Amino acid sequence: MTKTLKIGDKIPKFSLNLSNDTVINSKNLIGNTYVIYFYPKDNTPGCTNEAKDFSSLFKDFKNLNVEIIGISKDSIKTHQNFIEKHKLKIKLGSDQEGKVIEKFGVWVEKKMYGRIYMGIERSSFLISDKGKIENIWRKVKVKGHAKEVYERISC
Image (tube, rainbow, N blue to C red; front, top):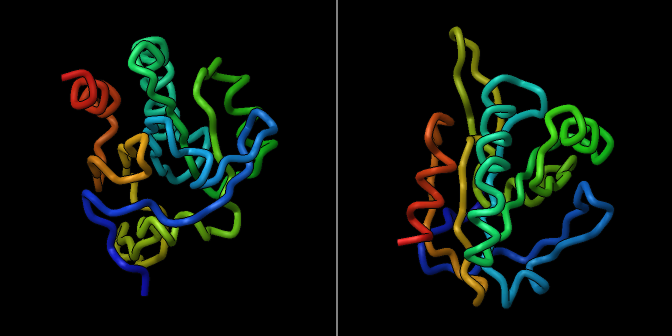
């Protein structure tokens, strides 16, 4: 059972391949402020809108020295196609084995139409330049979320 992360916790140790052919890990995040958001699947309506919303605010986040990284179980190739198709400006991380997803506690039991299954809970984490969690959004509703995250950081 994964420990539930709370505001003030250090982020779990991890390493992940990104869509731009680089690798990030919890160590090289130190010194930078990041928003890491977890989402179920590329090219689905909610996930597409969320990625587009974060991309539309890319320059605003950049002006605050904040990087945005979306993470799902999709492959790097799928991420690259998703980015190209929707002209996304954000980086996407591939966690096909679900290790990072589990460490952040967003691999959860879900229910839809009476069916119970495991899946990614749409969640976002604001990570400070010291590698600590500054804010957590769980069970995210896509509409207005990217703007809410931006407003939280910019205030």
